Length: 401
Image 1: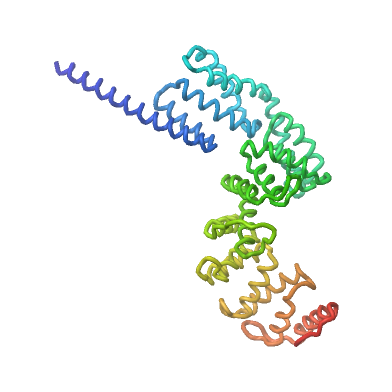
Image 2: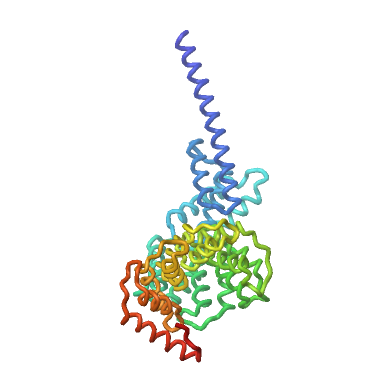
């Protein structure tokens, strides 16, 4: 009797556990659907895998959604992962074989058939797949590695790969033609590539097409609203160029610098994009962010943040920031006077700007006055005075000592 009761309890526990597993699997499937609706296809597949693990099996709904999600991943970059390409082929074949007769399944069956046909455009042989993938790697080297730049070779390889349907290769072709890398600039050809890739949610394509709308190249007219929309879509995927473009647009509008177009700007949103761009290491955005904190533009003034971001920007080669940091340490307005640091950044600015630099004025006064870590140096002061004199003479201006 005790054995029967124990067995019954085990069966009940097992049943309850199975029900719980099914409930969790359903939640995972719903999370996969939500991820798919936001074009997060990798998360979609991950959640579907978790659902299958819980169920210890698959079903038509899971398989259908996984085929669609993996097809989207492949569509964007068919030469990235042979395993997912082959797996999707197998799933399509299984679905078409086993689920043809499911009631009211005609539309889904048709979708899977279309996905299966689309996969025929990609290499079936593993050897061919990896040889093409190696070509893509080589093209990227020709395009981006400083010591190996060869734009004509990159163009040739990207064109071959793009013909196989690779979205990333098409986006790179858009970059080549929009920037004139080894070819004459052709904004219309670039627009064609960018449009096709942007429609496939490729961040490079979205940013490229946004840039064309921003500047009015090979589009009906400048359209800042479309540009911002495309930049935001690319920025959501982490595209640094798009983040900077948004920061640039929003900064210009916050400062009233745009002139050619009027848009409503949410200062909080604008500053957030400028900050994101600055954090990604963009020197210009770091300078903008520093100026925002220095001026208290839509945020409380914050000298610490201003100095920090001016410093980042200056160290990243921004000449305006170099002059600003030099003046900060020369003037002592928002930091302790430090002529040693001031000289360092004024010299950096002068090396970049030469006769357009305002740094010689301050360098002359530093060596003339001395102090704050620097001994008076009449000879060095005279060097900078001569530079200033020549600068003013070229412009027919009277120098004020």
